Length: 489
Ligand code: BG6
Image (cartoon, rainbow, N blue to C red):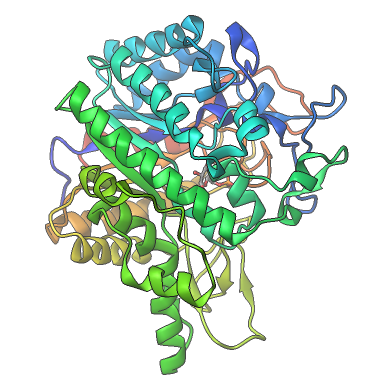
């Protein structure tokens, strides 16, 4: 009952949620830099102009930019083999279409990767974790414009070449499927850099849930992202044949709420639409028939598919399938059912599951279910869970300790589920927990929604000195890694 010796244990962050230093050393603004802080009862808003009096959490985040050495040393102390992080595209091409790359930005990631190497940690780099340069949103409406494919490739080529001997594992777009889920406008803005002109012109904060979206634009931009991703995979292999490049799917694990065949069918359709559509394009290199049917039924004009695109998608399939897993929910045709809360997607609450402080249902068995479904669909393809965790309120005791037993319980059950997957010979190669160090929440913009094994003294009112503290879960995860997942007590 243990994981293989070469299993990639680690943690995952995104540049915009941890680095801060939002204009330092020539960095340009990116999408999350335009989002204000929020909370459970005060949802996050978007303000397309920087207002000096407003609180934009990504601007300072947890100041990883100046603490990366200390943080990576702590990660190494836990025994990590891999550190998932993103490069902030806006640090490399501040205006999106600059002639030359920003050397100071490149140097920063050189320093980060060197520090990882020093500690024997392999970086796993996401090229775009919602960090589309703001200038690309303004000038090109993000990936709605086909020209953005070339801007992305120039950026990808720059970093693949620069770090070809420092980074082996790459992911193209974080959660590429969120734009077509219930998140509507925010999914479009985060994932594709696409925004409605009226929202872009607003001088008042707009609730993320109120951002407008248009499915024709969504599927056009998503197609451009698929092409950009496939071209990046091809390019990566040309630059270094040893590179392993993955996709990244926000896995929406769904169950029928009842045995009513109509619920079963609705669940299957939802799984196809939310998960298998993007997965199939990136793994099999072609649009599945069910989504072409959906396009036809919904009047989507597919003229965005240009001659040659089909070949690009076929030639740029990924080497591994990676995904985030936080929760599951139920699907039903009934309308008057209790809703489960969630990240970018919602469904019916499952009466058998408990939920986190933020209402996300906890379902460790669902992780095993998801891994089994994925390996059945894509036999032999390496799988990696690159985000999993629970946001919770943490209390610092007078002596500075933090007893986060709820977090340990959450991880214990999920790691048990992965151990069972390994026993079933499912090719699971790694696990990076989300937010191993507290950071800014993407959905609500809060600090108090804490995910970390490491506590950061930073709060929603902007106070705190950014000092780091180890929580009980830090020592627990350290033991889990040391014993290859054998000792989960
Ligand atoms: C994932 C994102 O969807 O969920 C992360 O890739 C995000 O960026 C994570 O932080 C957790 O969501 P939240 O809203 O709790 O930060």
